Image (cartoon, rainbow over the protein chains, first blue to last red):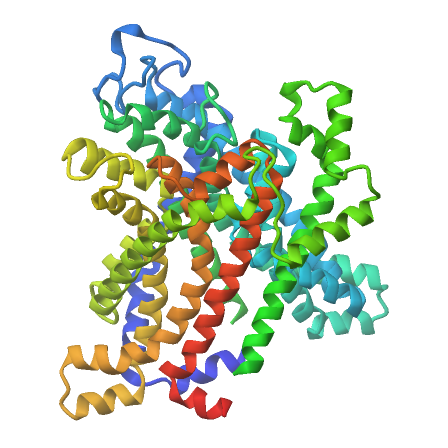
Length: 295
Length: 307
């Protein structure tokens, strides 16, 4: 508390004035991006669970009379090479695409927590070994690690999900370890110990929840980037393959029809990008909140 | 300085060895390499064929012997033979390397131009809001979607650039922009933040007090100060270029390491995949060594510190 307020008092007057102005006028204005992002994410989640509620057409309905039709009131995003409504397919694809993203983040969270906590709380030797492997993992781009996993385990939606999850474990492990180390030295953990709580209780009730808090931010942003990575794997033919609707595999098919139908390549990608932007905006807003509370 | 180089090289060797250990044992735990050599489960090889392959590739030896042989080859620069192409992995990679290096160079040029222009023009100015939106859009756009949009517009729409790669140098433009723009977005964020920090420093105030124009202040004083975090980030994203190359090369039907990697992953041709992983670790170490070596050139104080 005291360390955070000290620089503010010393801060120069011109730098302080706009900040105060922003704080007064921007209570709602400043939150608009985060609210929009949450709304969009909500839309995709509804689409993932009950696509029939939102989709104007049946996603699998083939129509030979309207093949590669341009966007129109009946088909706002146009139709594909079989005359299927692209908007409906994007909505039906949300579930498959988000499953890749959420599934991969879940794997990375569990794996990262186990690795990070073992490194932070285990023996010095365990820590050294585990962190060397985490460093090795961090030295490679995530897509390359994911491809390595697929080369070993084979292609397909489940393996793509596993591959992205495993490839991102090192990032999560590193954050968890750093957090657990700093939480372990904090005064409330010391207090809990001094009150005679057993070591496991201190770990489960105090260290773990507090070390996990910053992970919420990373996981929120991670859902977007993992969904993007999953769509990328599907795009190069290693994840979900047609006719199952998925944003990346839709784009892969669209590549062959780009000359006739720009909308086929444009709209499924818009879904991915808007998802990544909204999780990033939401993650940053959460970060600002948690940091504000910490100060 | 020599110490730094040696440390970096040792770290790179450690990374490669670690990756080799994990891959070797994961491969053996997950499946039968003899089956992969024979062409996968679809080829339905007879037990005799599999036995012959095991004998030829030394797969009957104890795992430890195989592992030591593999490590020994790795240390002498022998990455093995491709299951699928039946040529040495080094030859297969060497053949594809120039094309990918050209693409990476093109992408780096695009990323550097985009980040310098955007960051220098908008740092500390009202336009930074618009630039921030643009950076977020660039950094959030999947490489494969950006490529499709560029193809739609500039290749099929306006007809300025070819849609697939040929010997025509114009065919390098769209792949370079596709690969470089998202990286440019990321680098702009880093450079702009660093520039804004530098513009608050007393030396900028003193430069302004001496009557220097805004352009001179930014280019001659603030920029140099901001190059260190920029270079650090560049070294970090250099690794991502290879990942992006897989998608970019697929999208534009380009030859290169990326398309070689993809076809090797699809056919589970593990020696080639491993070879590319090793290459990527080596490039990552080399780029970061160059970044480290450039610090004292940019910031003289570090030179005195090191000496």
